[in-house]
Image 1: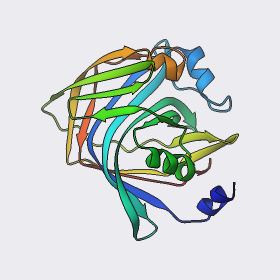
Image 2: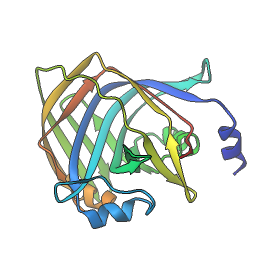
Image 3: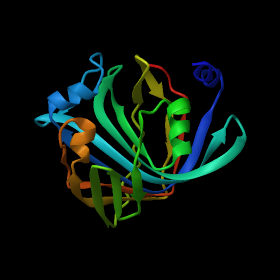
Image 4: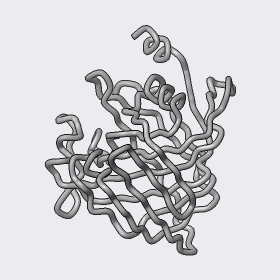
Length: 221
């Protein structure tokens, strides 16, 4: 508890570069989405369900900027599962699970960023990604198409921690390479394990290379 108070008092930014990133969205059954998200947050409904997102990236050089670069930096892979919500009359994401492949990064994510972290095997490349727990997995295949979609500002990212709703500071410097991609998903139980039901994933998404990722200590939303 004392460690959380110390972290809360520090002006901290974590920054690194997403070497490869795949973003995909889908639709989740409303009952499953509602079970994932605090009751105070309205869900963002789409078609006959609620929008859901899976962000996969291979990070290099994540380190502290507080305000200068301090300490070591880390390379790791991450899969962030998010459900679409409304917050302060704008679209936002609620983080349901953050799969990380390195123990030290999981600890940093839990204490400093307040992510709902989970140990997993995660591998992300430009054209495919795989996330696996001992009893479930998902593979995503991305076939990039020559294009240059404009960067979209990130939505607010919310998380529940110790009974409180928090907002994670999140910024992105647009990647020098952004492309639309055809998406194929082989979900072997991990979607249901994480979200309570298997989403219907869209057949199109985005790939990035070289996006700068910035986040910090979550604060009250």
